[in-house]
Length: 489
Image (cartoon, helix red, strand yellow):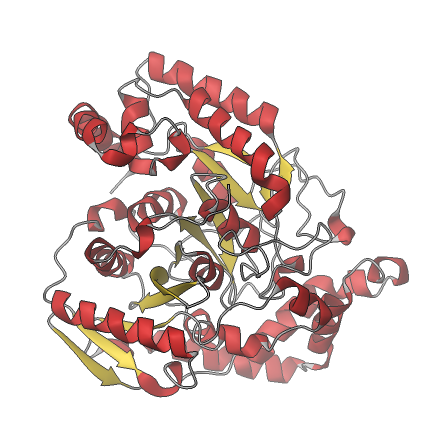
């Protein structure tokens, strides 16, 4: 479906939708940051909510809570208000671009923004100011979104705690002593703390879904290449994805619709028909067959995670046609990740002065890729390509896979600073689907006894984002976990 078709359908339903939204409990709030994107969009379209009012509400909250969570590196308040005023003038002229019109969004700080520094949370790039927007930023602006600023992260996206940052550790809004996960920790923390309506993150091994799980929100990594990664500081372009973090599945679908599309200047981009992923919201899931890959995804789980996920599977069993254990062989693509990461940083680490600007853990990981030989890289890439080409076979007898998003709870910030946690445990359940390039989403499915959120991962075949979103929304609608909010603020 084209962007114009999406916009026309949105406008056609805006008036009726505004009536429904006006009676919805969350739409009656005096705090517009509590509105979902769908609710806010309908109020903006009906001129009951100003994009300027909504943007200012988020900026006020950022000013109040920003130092506590440390989610933002750069806040572009003046530019955001100018964008919001422009979107407001378009509303007055009845030129509404779609459901993201006037919606304030945050961007992970490895995503280029023209004229605004993009640091990747590193001293190396502390003063780096791109000349052009990343492709996905252009798409968001074209869809009418307002950019609030750049979000903190794990340095160069090479870790899962977001405590390794030139700009200080990010804190989990549910419990400030804990990490929000990473590398998109600032993106997840900002969404959970209502510092933006949604955010963009990147995901190379876990970096959207893990922080989404740890912060009690939704995180979507689509099929590799569906959204352009051009203009994003890379980790490993063969594994890198960009996608939304949001407070609901429907909100994530709206943002993903804006991001998706072929980019001929991105060598990883893949041509796929334009879709409005919001169409998946409310779609029937009763005919779906759910596969449960018990090994290794369900092994050695934290006890609270195991109980929450088993409870979630019981819910899915009532919503779908069947659940059944399945198995599939993974593919080892570590050599690809290590070599591609080192290739990007090779010139920097070869310079003695620039090398000093890296955090020690990041530098150690980057240098680990120097030993990967060209033949080893080529052979690993070959295995990856074949695995991706045959990945649809995993779904021969099931429609989706379901796993815990993570096997462990997040580390405490102080502990992660003192000694890096075993990040292999944090990414075990997510990295296989980066290697295979499959669409995967994390949705809230419970809480630990300490009050930390738990995530459920739903995975589909290539380009089956609509199927994944439909089941995620059905589960969300059948449970109450997404309605809880952190106490911060």
